Image 1 (cartoon, rainbow over the protein chains, first blue to last red):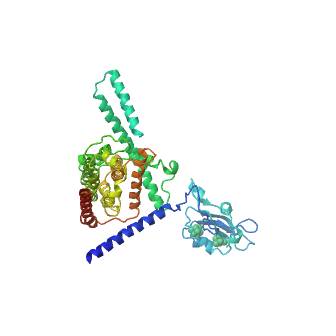
Image 2 (cartoon, rainbow over the protein chains, first blue to last red; image 1 turned 120 degrees about the vertical axis):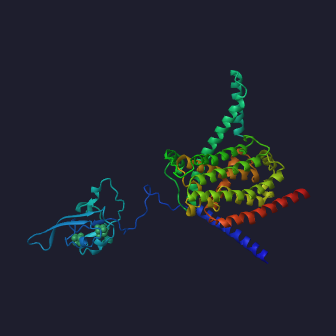
Length: 153
Length: 342
Ligand code: SF4
Ligand code: SF4
């Protein structure tokens, strides 16, 4: 009896060896799924959350009101805002608004917290530059790329 | 059919040169040996470069990747770049090593492989020395590289390489037995140990048809013999880093690497010669058929590597002694009985 059981196990084991080889061959014949990165890029989703950008208002300028909520919430502390009070104007006047993309962790909290829809994340992820200074984005640079209208927050 | 005329033309040309300039006649065989050595060396170098590329490509495609793609067409020159890089590397020697043994071990591991290529019939007449003890010579010579491996492991002065060397020695010695026994069936059928005679005996039917069991045993034992997965416990990365060659770097590591890949091809070439009819095949030149059959076996070994998980040390040993060896003896007895009765 033990002999028969052993032979049975032998046959079964050999069969599974064969099944394994068939599986390997199947995968071998399939197309590779690698994307050859610099030559080809993957198709981006329309709402891909890449770097932070400023949303243009109706007049083409930014919509920031200098409320500083984004600065308060930014965990990487990469946003700097310059503002001043002016008589006769409600709230603040924005003098400068800078995001250091090199520090940004793409968390999206600033976009979330902004009450005036001034910020958004755009599908842009290749941020490498040769000079660190180029990673500091000021208002014109932040406004340079816009989302398609239907995906505005 | 390709190599043989070229070689004999070279030989005649050189004989002419020797005769014209009145050089001593011992220059003729000497030059012949040099030419053969260069041929084998060149063949192994090109072969290993190609095999490494092939391994990387095949393993990548089994995992649905591309493997090397940048250097040359589909990464075909990648291995050349890697080899150049390896040559530039610093040749480190660990402080606790046994220096002379450490230095000589890679050559001990590599030299037998070159020597073994002497009796491989690449095509019609394309065999360097058709010794009348061809198969015996082959198995005797290839066993020597165990010494290289174990002395490399011992001399490194590291526990991982020592373990790797021990495992390797145990494995190679135990799998050598079924390997030779499976080849013995073929030798009995052919009635000769001469590689040429074995190929000639298969002019009608390949020996794999007469000796299917021996072929299976041979493939299993050969996989173990060249340390390929599922029998790669001497270099089991997850357990002992890389086994006997952990401490090696630069050209000495390249030697071990070269030996490993050349051995893989060698074992496939022996399988093709003993079981698959050697260089015999219709229409195309013999060299083509020989390479095609050998590479089919090499591909099989590569597929094994990506299909089967590694065995444990005790499983490996009991498989060799309790299963393969009796099976090999059984095959031998059946072959003998049939030969006597018919
Ligand atoms: S939260 Fe919006 S409005 Fe407020 S400072 Fe930041 S970007 Fe400007
Ligand atoms: S995405 Fe996050 S880290 Fe980047 S600027 Fe906005 S809050 Fe700061």
